[in-house]
Length: 548
Figure 1 (tube, rainbow, N blue to C red):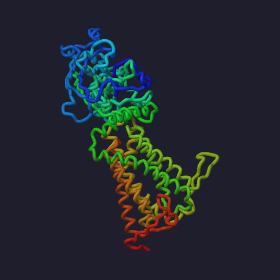
Figure 2: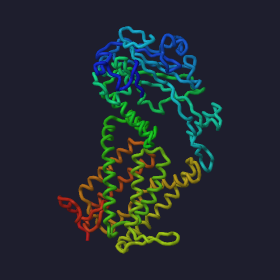
Figure 3: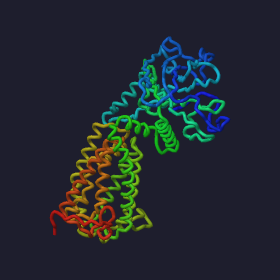
Figure 4: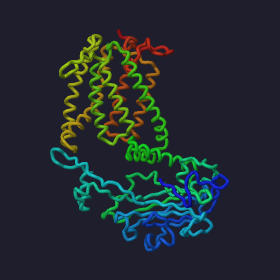
């Protein structure tokens, strides 16, 4: 958003002779609102109006005028106003010529003339560009590798470009975007500030007169306007909608918006987030149920904490592990392959950084586990590394692990082949490599739960489960619930969303095994503990039945 006022000086140093910065308008001040359209963002006066003022619908440059507004953020009937209009090429030709259109907003009290030249403490002024610019949408140019048919979205983009005679050379050009909705906010701020005592996040949005007193704070707010809401201006568009809102906002609400906007700008500048990420966050806030939104805000923090605890406990365990009895080495290698495919797939899609970071760290930990799970021997010639099973793994655990993977492969390979053929016949891809990657990801996501079951099979054959402290059990349960919530709210590929519920199934099977089988306190659990290391004061639950 952009905030603006009118006056001589701006900055924390612009204070009066008394060393204090006072408001020019008092709380409860009555005023009028004026909105003019212009081709320039320079000062708009009676002298400049003939040259830069736009004649809208044959009525001159004045687009909107509201009377009897009050500088008070309390819920006062009639103190919020709404303007709706539709502008055609005849009304406003500049957007179709790729030129800017500026909305000049004035707050005027005591019947003051908003277009009077020179400083006037009865008038506050702000200016806002109704045109933004962005690269032209490009087709991904995916196609069915057998029939050559493009995706529906690509066909729409190519058809639109053909209708506009857009050549391949013009596909990368910058096009104008119309902003259809703006909030004009006046901030209910009439405090007296000491010299150099105005908060930095406020002073950048304030204007001062020659005595150091500040004008009413105007915030021309486009914070909630996402790229998806903006309208491409071209020859196929005949009219542009415009909706203007007037509100009086409290200081706290205003500061939250500008601080959030500033944080997002910093994240984009250092590359930790994209504009698409921020638009997705705004979409969640605008479209989600308030109750679900509140829960999601809380569990987002918990998800980060629990991910950290999971990685911490995982690393702690594998640093101390000296026996592979009861653990599946094959599952480690399977996890490396599947998580590598998933990470590449997430990178290739518009995925939240929270999901991407968690996936990447998990992959690195799985790779590190190989050194702890197997004997790694460095060779002088290719392949330079040789992996050998540890003696503790060469037992019934290894035999059951091999049996599990053998039978699972009978189910996995035909399903994977069938999915790949289906994807080739009915889906669109950029290239054959893209088809291979997407097929692999589809197999991982859709049938990945099959590859997560060797540990469950080992539990079944050994008729026992590893000792798992209740605090770890509660953590695992909560993290499963949190992932389910994220699946509904956070933007992620559909297959990744389905994989979340796949993990639920595995967890439910584990809960059944824990209830049915005895607890073997000599087996290490996935969180790095055996019974002698568990920091628990509560006694282990009694199993339903003892298995010998």
